[in-house]
Length: 315
Image 1 (cartoon, rainbow, N blue to C red):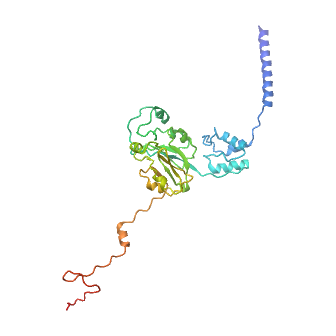
Image 2: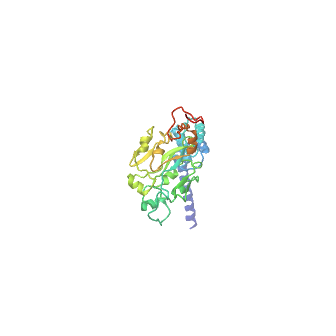
Image 3: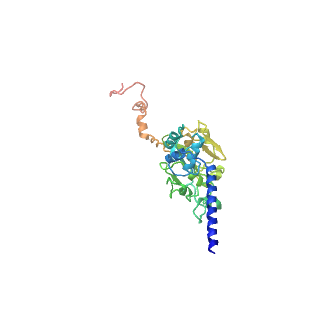
């Protein structure tokens, strides 16, 4: 019995040693040398691992930068241009600066503009709610109000406004990682250029119904009338599937579209408030004085041109 146990232990030990030798030889033969620059690039990354760059995390992004040998198709939205400059310095590559972007909520369906027609009493999730039915209002394209975008944001840049029922983006905290865009089942959140001085113009509606139907569901919906498209001198606006869209790469922020939109579906953000119109009294004072009326004779008839009263009776 004792001999059997000893031989069993010896056999297992020998087998373990043989397997260890085999694994060592295989690992040596198929060993993959990792470029040490990957670690250096990862160190300068923000470490958010948000996936906004299109990769699984910061290390996967760093590996792509090293292996591709170019930064043209790689960009970290969280770190922005500053981080990309550091990455370029590590790899000895050139990098082109990109315009900063921000998440924009393209829904105008506030509680006042889009009244509820039913009440959802299920689990508070936009994804689940969208799978069950079109929503609480007559608009089947708008925000569902459950806050999936808020939960998806790692930077606390989105919150739900209880007064409007819509998400609000804090542009100072937003890193344009795109997590909220992916989380929204209605696709009402879009990444757009922040614009000069953080000013931007966009159509805050994605409703593709015809004008009358869209307006019935939401008083501030885009009705696809095309007035904005005709007013834009830069060809930045197109109307397709009954809804207008502004190309932020072509838009020059003239805001002519805002003035002609009949429903207020086009929003202009961070523009200065226009000066109030002058009062009528000020305009009246600035106007030239009216010529004096000709004096009348005692009989009630106008006096002859050029005649003046001298205080003497006429002879």
